[in-house]
Amino acid sequence: MTDLMTSFRRFDSSRHGTWVVAGVMVVLLFILPVLDDPLLLLQVRYYISMIILALSMAFIWGFGGIMCFGQSMFFGLGGYAYAIAVGNFGESTAPFFLAMIVPALFAAFLGYFMFFGRLNDVYVAVITLAVTLALYYFINSTSGDEYTIGKARLMGFNGISSIRKFNWPGDSTALLSANHLFYFAMGLLIATYVGLKLLLGSTFGRVVVAVKENELRAELLGYDVRLYKLAVFVIGAAIAGLAGCLSINYKNFISPNAFHLSLAAQIIMWVLVGGVGTLLGPIIGCVVLLYVSFILGTGASGGGLNTYLIFGLIVMIFVLVIPQGIVPTLRDWREQGGRYRRMTAGAVLSMAEQLPASSRAPVRAFGERMLGLAPPSGHSGNKG
Image (cartoon, rainbow, N blue to C red; front, side, top):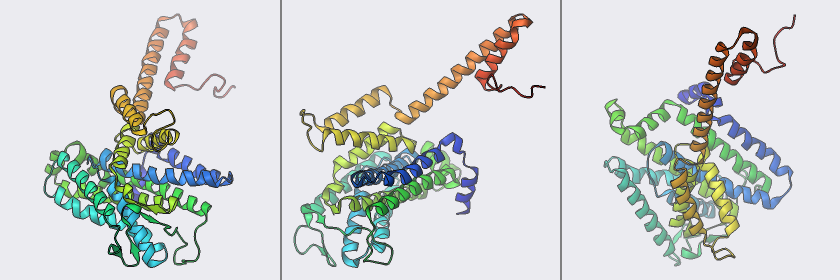
């Protein structure tokens, strides 16, 4: 905790834009409910749950260097943990935490054998893919009456419906209203984003990035890379479970499709399009691709175009044209623009030195303004 607070105090918000993004989220937090559009709030809550899911993958893959095909697995485990627990407990306080604890424990169990077994990235991707498929087909086959956990039936491919929404902690009779559900979801998104930023700015986060960049060198420096990778895997699983829990409170339903490979592929697309190694990028990629999916429809659009075909084309274009993703590419363009501006300003200042003294001052002032060394015209200092 002390390390996180230290990183909070020294974090370079102007460089990373953390507080700008969080500020936009806070503005939306207060503006959207004022619009008094229940359907809009419902749709935004769905986007929030998917953005949190994208952030879980951004953390695991972009900063931990773990190519995981199992984020939909943790998403589904979180959703089913909440649905089963709330069906047994009759209130949502404990199920909310179980939605994060169950995927985290499962990730700890699975990750222990993968990372302490020294499996390389390819095998980790294959194993997480295989386990996701196994869970998908297992849940699909649990439609019989014998597949119950306490009072809750798994219902197999039919899914669990009429799932109880969040209630105020400890009061099962006081369900959260639509506005309160939105406030809660947006607050969790802000906490997730800022929390990950602070975590990455801490010593733990810097070691995680070091392990991703050069695992052998980090190990030679005395860090147990297996433990750090396992910690990243568990944290990402807990965040994905949180997303699954919020998704249930959007539609009051969960089915084995939560484990489907189509969702696992979409999560990777969100991060790839937005930019690996950033947190803002996957948010943008998630929103853009979800909006494209909304326009095209869940299956084939009216024009006969398949959603996944369009997604595939988008990913191909991004891989070929801007392989770094949206945010890293924009960042590179901004840095290149700054370099060109400094080069041009240097040339202007050099040219000013060659001019006669009478015409040198305005040219030099122009070059200094390009470098940000002089105030704009009309903002001079004391005038006598």
